[in-house]
Image (tube, rainbow, N blue to C red):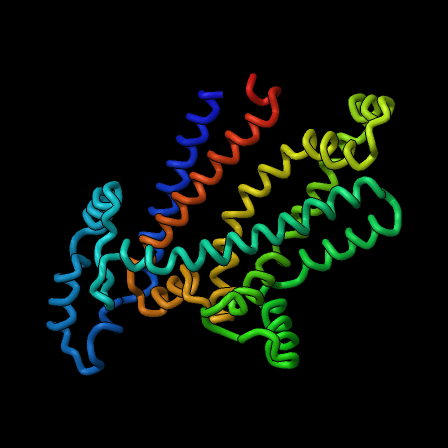
Amino acid sequence: MIQAVVRQIALGLVVVLVAMTVTFLLVRLSGDPTAQLLPEGATLEERQALLQELGLLAPIHEQYLTYLRRAVVGDFGESYFDGDTVSSIILMYLPNTLMLGAVALIVAVTLGVPLGVMAAVRQGGALDRAIQFVSVLGASTPAFWMALLLMQIFAVSLNWFPTYGMGGWEHLVLPAATLAIANFPRLARLTRSAMLEVLPAGFILASRAKGMPERRVIWRVLLRNGCIPVLALVALEIGGLFGGAVLTETVFSWPGIGQLAIRSLQRRDYPVIQGIVAYVAVMFAIVTVVGEVAMRAADPRLRKR
């Protein structure tokens, strides 16, 4: 098990390095940041002086090595526009995204797992078909369209929730619902598939033969033995929530990492963009390792591999 975890950590480090490298190269293809920093009438000498000050005239490999050397100790430089360190800016926005993602994940798991179990137990019945229809409909609906639909119905027409910004709990409802609706269908379908594989197992039949109540068989024996693939997907969904947060936070003006990323891209704020990708990649790698450990802890067969 230790070897598998070490292998997963090494793989996570490779993923982080690749993400940081690709981002480093792509942001330098996005345009000249001095166009946003200097007034329209700035001379060529002024642009060259600013590029020199920002370290962007050095050879690309020197910039890259400097970036990696500083990133190893958590130093991603300073924002071109705000003057604050990148880490302090990200840590100011990150809690808002984590709160939004945590609420959305809780809602998605609370909906997806029970619906998947009920669909498997009622395989082929009306409830199974209804849950599968809802899952397919939710998975095929674009997140931005769902966000606008929820906003139109619950914010504009019914005036139950605010349309944008961050304040009380009511500001969290629509963006969290958008992310949850985008993610719970996958959980429901995978849970259904995992439960259908376990249902014919001998220990399920033995539990019923011993007179164990059906509800206990389903929610304790069946779910416990079929939850391994679900745990893996939940870990991956956490990474997916960060990707979905970019769009959702933009639509609802939620002050999180997603909105910060969009604003930094528009301004070509290289250090902030690179810092956001590095933070998200590291968090995704950590979640993946934790998910791997959880799966192996839950299934003795995996611990032997």
